[in-house]
Length: 115
Image 1 (cartoon, rainbow, N blue to C red):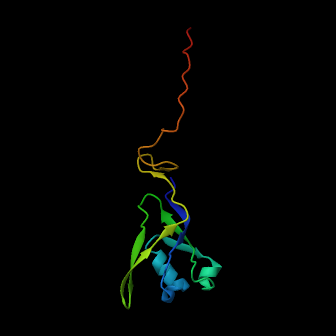
Image 2 (cartoon, rainbow, N blue to C red):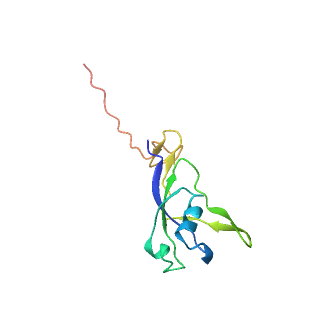
Image 3 (cartoon, rainbow, N blue to C red):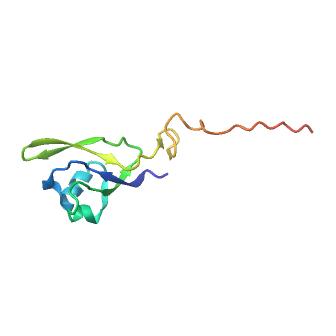
């Protein structure tokens, strides 16, 4: 039963003061465990673009924003996911959401053999 999977996450409009590997780790910890920061992000080569690989628990809701405490007050940071996997709480599996299990299954009726 897989619950932890890696997903690329972006934090658009992250304040420039938070562009360090240590700061990214702290911000990413609100979503999951940081696994890797891409080189452009880690080296602050493209400040308009950040991309972090984070291990997330797919059985938990994905936050669309997180609160960050800054010296000038709280900051609401949007979170973007490159992919949101479907997860079923009933059968604890990836690939479909709760209540949709079996919806796309095709039923095949076969005549019963008489003996």
